[in-house]
Image 1 (cartoon, rainbow, N blue to C red):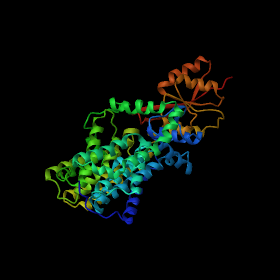
Image 2: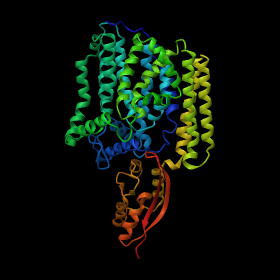
Image 3: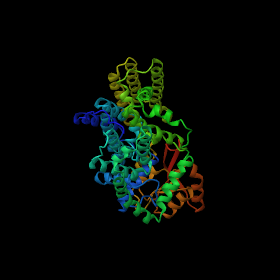
Length: 547
């Protein structure tokens, strides 16, 4: 039977307050100002808003189509947040992600304090908060930041059980948190939490040759708690959908990702090792430097827990054909914990540290260069704010890496957190919201608002079928082809207008001419489709009044 972990004190309330302020400073830039982002964010937010519009808290719809790829919890959280704030604003639907990201940082601190001591827990939490991957997810109205918080709640209770002495069982409050957290995670994104928590427990049992500690988790009561959380809605949606929910979510979404690439998101094994260098920025060198230390210390219980958390799930994610950078977000805290603990150990060899810092420098140059060049690439203009912000990002990062190379870990941490603050402020607040070519839906919404009101008209959009348009213009928005846009004008009020993308213009004009009418342009909106990475030219049209 395995011994208990060393006893460390918890994170103090003062530390939690500092981490909370750090999270707000890192996550709030751009939170209110970034428009809805295609495609996932706009789909989630629109489906959540339709839940408020319809009053149906069981079924999930995007316009008239069922949306059965993910379970219900994120829609409940987003709809509840919007109902309490502003259901027309995208930031309201982002609130669960913001709160989930903050909770994930605080939970990482708590896990780190239990496993490695309070200083390591705080450092790991700061690394996670400053990572580019969590910075992105905290600003998106999707599942992943909230899912991370639920998974970390489960992992925190697993760590408590694993580190307890022989014969010590989880107390009932911790048991309820463990299994209800697992139920919530399942309601957020299906079996991902089962993979992470289940593979962690199984790997520890195998590595320690000890399954007895699993009894501390009260598994029989736990299964009942999970069913209590998950089963009521699952039964309700299966009845409401005629069995379509499980068929589409398990068969059409999950299975499709396991056996093939979905929506062209395929990549070979090893993809996440490369993506880590960007997703963990600016702390990737610290993460990579922890690898030799973690291998040497793999027999320590705390290190073994992190490795069991990290390696089996990472292997599964690498083998699954469909890959996206955020899939490994639940594993990033384990990496941060190992990196934070390794900071207290002697540094790795000069060659290893040099390779780490070299890779970090390449990533820093790439990120700062991208921020500086975006206005030129997209709009052919030089943006002084983007240039200054990118230079500040790069400068703070390089100062941090230089301090790290001289063994001044604490000072390096401060510099790298400052680099992350500059990165988030520059990219998400000062550059991206000020690139109108990226934000076609808000510009079209503003242009339509400048037109005289047209009662009884539902906006018709041809050739640009992104969900951000539906969120911006309303659930009744019609995403059609060129002939459909012509039909909307011909059958609607005389004041009707339609937006037609250049590729659909030929069919639109032919259908209008066939009716004996003519169309005239009112305005043109040029931009870039973020989802497809191609240029878009929308023309707002109306019919020439009949004589």
